Amino acid sequence: DAGVIQSPRHEVTEMGQEVTLRCKPISGHDYLFWYRQTMMRGLELLIYFNNNVPIDDSGMPEDRFSAKMPNASFSTLKIQPSEPRDSAVYFCASSQNPNSNQPQHFGDGTRLSIL
Amino acid sequence: GDSVTQMEGPVTLSEEAFLTINCTYTATGYPSLFWYVQYPGEGLQLLLKATKADDKGSNKGFEATYRKETTSFHLEKGSVQVSDSAVYFCALKDNFNKFYFGSGTKLNVKP
Image (tube, rainbow over all chains, first blue to last red; front, side):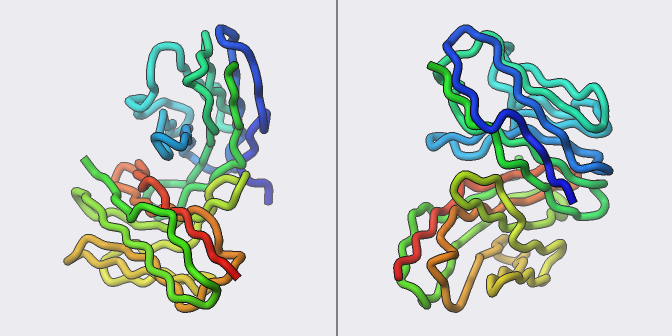
């Protein structure tokens, strides 16, 4: 079975550039989560969606960050303009119906470096 | 709000030693509890879970028991292997399907 697919796996770009991270959740999963992982702050939840609708974006650090989920099989996390402090590993995860007590399934992450 | 606290690492053990990684939580309602493992360069993978008080989750020799009275979900393994070296995350899922993760505990197992 295909898991959560993220692209690109690695991105290196200069500060000020727009960065778009992509995620394809597992088919049939109603929930999609975006996380950021750094050494200093650990794993932080940025935003999550239910049935393509953003439910909680309180973890989005600032207006430079935006996330969309135009359909059930695709989501993007965009940073514009990017800054060096945005360098981190960004994970996408998906899960099934909340009443099923199913865990989140994580992608392999996108390692982002802003120079 | 809900939160998870786990012991700081790194934890360094010799092969075949006993492992305990402590995890305590704060939650309203009745959360489900999870342990995830992250190997270098990879995403988090579910290791085990427990959905109600006194449940024991187990997988690959790892165990954790959901203790409501002490709000804990400590991870244990009787005999660790070098291949168990990874970062371990304790997590809870609240009644709104929102997940809260601990800060992670790095485990180094030496031969």
